[in-house]
Amino acid sequence: MRILFDNLIFNATLSADTVDANYPITNLQNDSLKKIYKATQASAVITATLSEDSSINSVYIGYTNAAGAVLAMYNSSGTLLGTKTITVTRGGLSFTSVSDVSYVTLTLSGSDIIYLGGFGLGYNFTMPNPVNDLILKPIDNSVVNYSLDGQLYQNKVDLLFYIEPTYSFESVDTYNEILLKFSDLEHPAWVEPYEENTGIINPMWCKITMGDDPTQTWGWYSWTHTYREVR
Image (cartoon, rainbow, N blue to C red; front, side, top):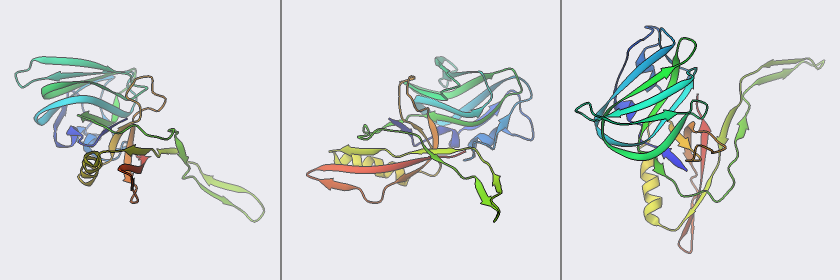
């Protein structure tokens, strides 16, 4: 299980080869996936220049109509360091770390005018393996009312989801490292429940809540987190 606590996009300089002025590229640095960047054609190349050379082992995209997505990573001399093809229906992947990345391009293609709501990039953190089974739990925020005579009135909205993994580990250093990453978190984060592309839960853009009642018994720490989908 991986979490991108430090999303390099928020401190990067963003540009694109095609931009609808009503949906600027800086919308990708907003916490809401539905505040989209939009192109003016059925393909787009987004460039993210990082604030400093960095190591990268993950990329995520969300809320897009693109059919294809390819990440290319370059050093400060413009040398191509590697490319990664993103399965759009999955929304991201982890990979072997690439060092000295100065800027990246994200090439999107589709059959309609391209839009994108979320872009995550950086070095994700490997969490301890959860000790419970993970399942997407639904949140229904639909507004439902019944008249006295039984008529139904509702404002239907799409379901949101959350997961609640419980971690058990022995090292106090692991506990303190996770606690520090959480305390420094200023935005939602990309949560990747399964690093393998065959995972049954896709990467999620989430508000992270770390349980305020962790326990320690005979040197073992137990801690439950809640990752709630944000869009």
